[in-house]
Amino acid sequence: MDPETTLFEQHRSRLFGLAYRMLGTPADAEDVLHDAWLRLHAQDLATLDDPEAWLVTVTTRLALDRLRRVKAERAHYTGPWLPEPLVPEAEHPDVTLERGESLTLSFLLLLERLSPEERAAFLLREVFDYSHAEAAAILEIAEDACRQRVHRAKLRLREGRPRFNVDQSAQRRMLQRFVAAMAEPSLDTLRALFAEDAVHISDGGGVARATLRPLHGAERLARLYLQLAHNFHGPGVHYELASLNGAPALFLHAGGTLSAAMWIECDGERITAIHALRHPGKLARLLAVTKPAGSASLH
Image (tube, rainbow, N blue to C red):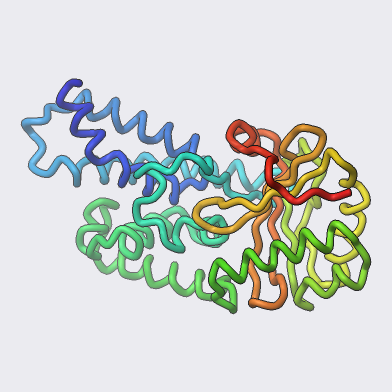
């Protein structure tokens, strides 16, 4: 292995973690890392006083440029956009480094509230623990400007954060209750799952059947999932309790394929938000490693 690749692999985990949190899709993060690797190979290593700082700077700026482009594309996306999960079995350092809340799909979606510049400053300072001065140098801005970006980011994220912070066991229990309710569906049992102001967000990208805007309210969500329970039933339908980005999730297998990946927010007693990833392209990577064995069946 050449010196440039050896150096790059030493820091790959941190670089991937940063790029993925910036962009919300593994493929975009990998593209950024590939570009950073190419730039490293064009660089004279002897001129680098701090190779890690150089790599973080290059990766951040490449991710920032790409995020500005994809932000414009997402503005024309059909229906709501949801981040793409990491492959569940990819439990390697790229995935686990600095995991915590900042890697959950709900938090990645929350980061979409930020401008690209705010997102970069926030992640560098609050997730990857760079000082304001270090983050400012990476972003080529004044330290005061960096502080302002981080401050604005915190305010925006605080507005959108879930009101309740529950542990994963509570989320798993709620998902199990959801599966049970879908197995024997009725309007009352489904309505009882949802908080009165619950929201449903589904990402079909215009290529899979999905709601084209967020739905709000326990009554509307109960009616939606009652219809879905009737549409998805029989021996070929399985719900599988899984984990996505370190948090509980459900996989819906139907007709031999992965039809949806779902995750929730809850208050411990009721679901406050439910997200359904339906886009076939985003599900394709998950399908390659998921197995319906051991899942709860709907009949």
